[in-house]
Amino acid sequence: MANIENLNGGTFERLSPTECRDAVGAGEAVMLDIRGIEEFAAERIPGAMLMPMPEFEPVAMPAQGEKKIILQCRSGGRTANLAGQLLAAGLVTSISHMEGGILEWKAEGLPTICPDPSRAVT
Image (tube, rainbow, N blue to C red; front, side, top):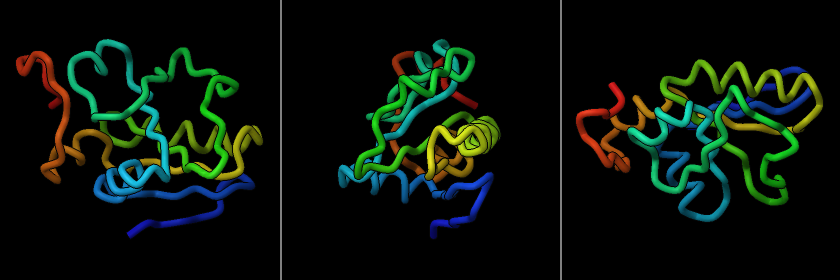
């Protein structure tokens, strides 16, 4: 179940991988993968958009409109950090992140796109 808290003047929502899958599948959310290009190329979540953290430009984020923006990384640490920064800077008023990242996504048995299984995220 989603865990919502106030953080740096905005709303921060922690979602499970299943909640993220359901929100994206229902057209209620956009998932941004903030890992590096090589990580994304090795294995990714279907439908996730790449926006690597080192080159992350908040002005390039999709418009929030009616959709949630869900940040996703390998294990959840980078996304929690970035969410706090975006809220503190006033660049968003609400942001979500996927608890446990792609590792938890896989642990829950959810599908990934993995062109070369020898490079899968571990």
